[in-house]
Amino acid sequence: MPDLALVREPRPVRENRHDDSILRFVRTGAAESLSAEEILTWGIRNFAPRLALSCSFGAPEGLVLLDMMHRIDPASRVFVLDTGRLPQATYDLIDRVRERYSKRVEVVFPDAHAVRSVVSDHGLNLFYDSVEKRQLCCRVRKVEPLNRHLATLDAWVTGLRRDQNVTRHATPKLEIDRGHGGIVKLNPIADWSHDRVLEYVADNEVPTNRLHRAGYPSVGCDPCSRAIAVGDDPRAGRWWWENEDTKECGIHTEEQGSGI
Figure 1 (cartoon, rainbow, N blue to C red):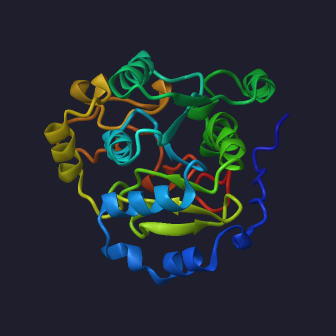
Figure 2: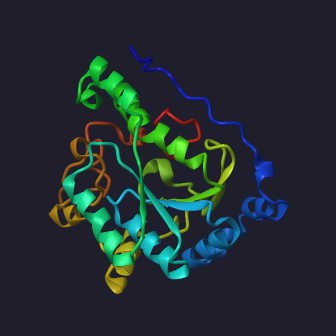
């Protein structure tokens, strides 16, 4: 039986993989005064082609960044973690993006043996049983595949915003990602509001997940997402059976696999 308490050790931090000028720029916090487009331009100039956007295709933030990056560099890269439990609407959106931008979307899959082992030991819907089992599922289906993919990159881009969740209020626009071996993590719209994201979507006709129109502001795995009432927190439909302070899958935490 897999150890539910297991926490993967972060890969060794190798900050010497970056030029000193890049490390100085990240550490000074100078990026906080830059626009999202300026941060992305800096990232593409310094890291492409070993820079990629992580896009869930379940929230408009990732699509906004995909659109921005494509305008800056049509060869910019994007990847999605296919957990095997995504709703059909998300797969349909991936194909729409391929057609709209003539872009190759890199699809990252979990290890099939690991998935079989977890399902065999704990059932298909283990995530409802406890926070620990939900984190185990996220670790196998999302965190570990992400770790493998990020090992091939020098920097990655995320759609994190500070007002998304209590766990994200201190998100910087640029950081050294110690949980992934010291690569650079770009969070260009960390200071954006949800309304600003939607304004960009409308102004630029950015394709988004059709489930948003059905009351799902945030779409993850199908069994872990649900529609919310008007006025609810936008992420209230994600892992709705848990407390707010545990609602992370482990992707955006330094101690990979902890999920908190």
